[in-house]
Amino acid sequence: MDIEEGISSLATGFYYGYLKIVLPSLSENIELYETKESDGDEPGINFPVKKLFVLIPSQAQVYDKVESLNLKNIQIAKNLMEYRITRGMVKDRCYSNSVYKVKDERSSKLYYCVCEYATPIKTLEEQCREDAEMKKYKREMIYAFYNTLKMMVEADFELKDYVELIYFKGDGKLSNSSDYPSIDELLLTRIKINLHQEKEKGI
Image 1 (cartoon, rainbow, N blue to C red):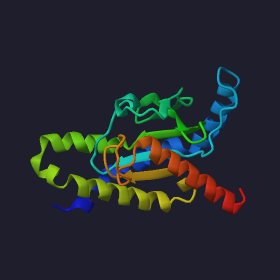
Image 2: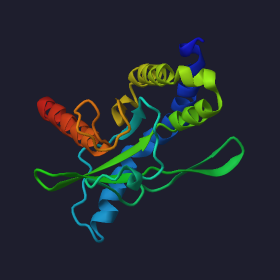
Image 3: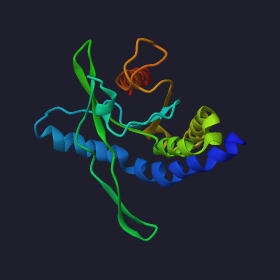
């Protein structure tokens, strides 16, 4: 089975059919969210990293709700403003991104971020349930998806700064192994890495 060839269409479809659509307006939508929601019940809302974090689990375990992860340091907040576009004869097709609050236990500080799974991974996992041959190559296909998508993102100089791919081992739940970090740990680490990099650049 040609893994690279078989997975290329999934990665390409996600890139052109989703990321290229939602990323151009992401930064503006985040800034609108900060302004609007900070005037409400939670003053001072700030997204330290204005990117879309895309989760790519090596085991293809995709949870539909964050509550299913049973993690105490991540909570869902209000979604970003919907983005609508007429596309493929669908009038006002709606795109929406979810916002999460990630808590740093050491400082009790809350970090807001935009995060979601790469939905083709869920499709792939569902296919593997029905196809024993595909199931044999599931991990290889997921890694190939990640690499293919990463190459396309890195080659896009206009959008690459607005998305970050997070490929990780395990299912994203709490574990006793540093090799299998939980989703909240992954996001907190990536946020802090981004902040450190921005500080070094003097941004």
